[in-house]
Length: 513
Image (tube, rainbow, N blue to C red; front, top):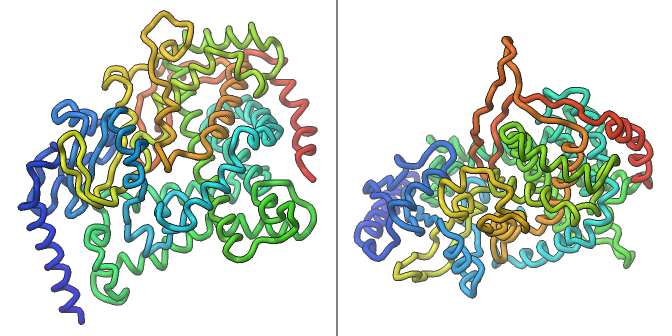
């Protein structure tokens, strides 16, 4: 039996080589020359791949094709190509997810909202359920939680400004955990916040292209776990499966116990577990609720953290932008804490938020799509099962524009060349567009206005009193954040800080049943 398996692997490898060597290579989109067997593995960067893809685009054009062993990939480096393939009538064949055998099958994540196949019966049920909980009308009901957590955020920044990344993560986790499960984040190193952080780090490590041979040669997935060189199967079962299962199961079970006790905070989970009809969900419906809640928990918190960390960095680097935004807040909001209703009146702050969404894109390559049948585009042949990435970091007029931070170009009254609204592409395309985009945007907007109203942000000082200019570096995973940096956060309005402290206790009590 082992000999047959190894023989099968050899045949698959040889078949892949023959296909890739003698297929219609001349009709594929251009890209860097691959090696015969490993393809372009040796050319893939270890960090910030969107930069490499952007440079490749300058050589090969907006469509760049490459290969990792037998897995084919296409990078879309223009907004037009992303629209043409991912949002037009072609979206029906470009909306699936690539098959990652290690992550989906061996670790058991194929039913996760972000991973599920568009052909699966649950796909539409997931989208419908999430839309009911995250549309603009539903988001209005979360404003009490968002504003209460924003007040806690500014108090935390005033007390421990050097821990601003922790304070941001606590804010994002506090909002999304209460909205999703009714859980109140009340201490440092919160269990559920830490659980998600660990899962996100692990996810980044195990989903790196080319790490697992089983992803390129699925027949390896049938090798027994006890077999030599099958450590990947043993690791999947013993280490990874339990960790990721806890992400959706543990908070869901906690929320159910709170509901049974009668003392709980109304949340996405409680609303759907106890619908107005009075008929409790069956086993299948509860599993759908559990996976959707997990998607809110994972996607919402991480997105907001990335946006707010990028915002803090740009306020350090662009003091003139900070002053202009603060001037608008002082003029329009006055000496009170902002609220969500102020969003429509703060045109420059809104432009600032949009520019942060673009410049510090939390998902610079979006989530990968998979082509389900052969296609042709712009005269090129794109084979079935190609993984497609939209390099949205590069969409706004090339590398120089992508590296600059210019919120004025997104302000409707500026006398500069207008730019494409980044909300048009940073949250995904077509059937895979993020259903929580509005919720994440409002949560980030509220934190930004609170921080600008209460604090001044500037460069940190070294032991000689000299300013330290922070480096601009990003993490590399499915989501991307600015890497940790130093800065100074000083109170500029003591009255608003006091107002935040005065209202915190009443607001948190008012959100409980």
